[in-house]
Amino acid sequence: MFAQQPAPKVPAKIIRTFPHDAQSFTQGLEFSGGTLWESTGMVGRSGIRKVQLETGKVLQELRLSPPYFGEGITIVAGKLFQLTWQHQTGLVYELPSLKMVKQFSYPGEGWGLTNDGKQIYMSDGTAQLRVIDPATQREVRRINVHDGARPVANLNELEWVRGEIYANIWMTDTIARIRPLDGTVIGYIDCAHLPRDREFADVLNGIAYDPVGRRLIVTGKQWARMYEIAIPKP
Image (cartoon, rainbow, N blue to C red; front, side, top):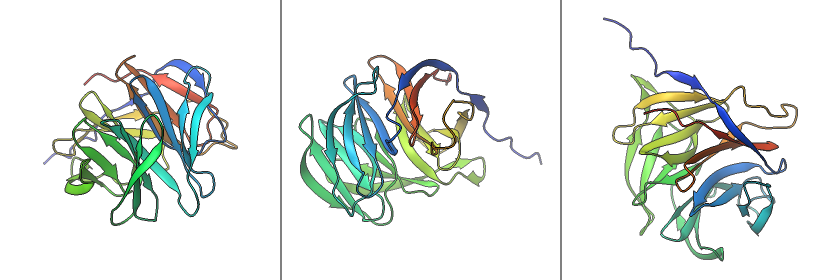
């Protein structure tokens, strides 16, 4: 018997650099119609922002009241869904007004969100992804994420990129590329060399794919920059 080789890892290739608010504790990042939205964390500092990518300017912002700690976001059918970390509460907002229209609940912790246009995918810090019906906010099934026989845990911020789910692995500089059909990790993107002020910046966390501009943007918590990086070949 031969041991299965782990999925290949490739270094992130920087294409462009953009400014980012270094006070922003990034929890989620998503494009919708060419517009960039960002969710931020920490109690008393959590919120949702509409951000101008080229300048880093905050164009619109809604603060999330304590005790909530904001987490991942995703946008489906004109509505923005936001998780909270430990309060088992999700929030639904109308766009572009950011008027809250609904709350929903889920067991356990809320970490990251993304969608494929029909279903929402949610991470909770484990090696599982939950599949959520956006109409009812109910869990449909779970996907076990693995690299060979090894579960891949600490899945955090998520993004749907050309039929794959990209996931930040918490407390690392690595993004996993996940096949949603069966949870197989088909590769990793190594972002360890992306410049950041390591004295103040926190971990890599924030992935946004712009299907209009065909751009992949990444950043981290309290990073002073966002990076457009090359999209690995399937």
